[in-house]
Amino acid sequence: MSDVLEIPAGQTHLVAPALLALRPRWDDEQALAEVIDAQLRPSGYRVIGVFPEPGKEAVAAAGFREVHALAWGHYLYVDDVSTLPQARGNGYADQLLTWLQAEARRLGCQGLHLDSGVGADRAAAHRLYMRHKLRISAHHFERNL
Image (cartoon, rainbow, N blue to C red; front, top):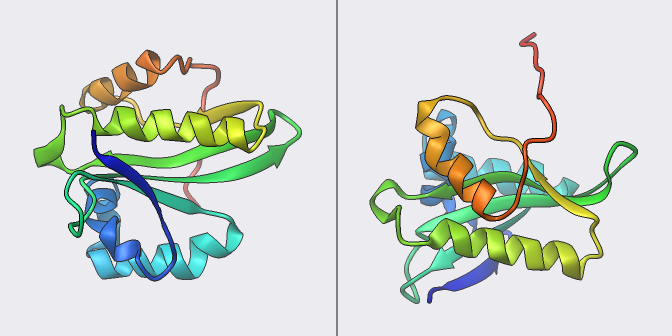
């Protein structure tokens, strides 16, 4: 089994390729790492990665944050779960979700939440979430401005 490690600021480049597979709008790994370190981490965003080979980049990564809200109480919100395309099907995302659930329990969270896009291309992700006993509990609405 591969190691799941939390990545500190300044080492975000180790998970950037895996996250870029899910978030290609950031164009390149350096831009993504800079956004995470400069804008997201100061508000509590944390990152973990799966490292099957020591000294190499992560093959899968997740970004998350601890949240307190009136609607759901104290919970861990998972912003991003992503695996490099060539590494999919090896259980790396399962390792990430198992780690995230343990971290939520450690923090005393009442739940773990995430949003996922819809469409045929998201079916594998949805199966993963269901395997980890996440359920569809709400609709997410948005409006571009």
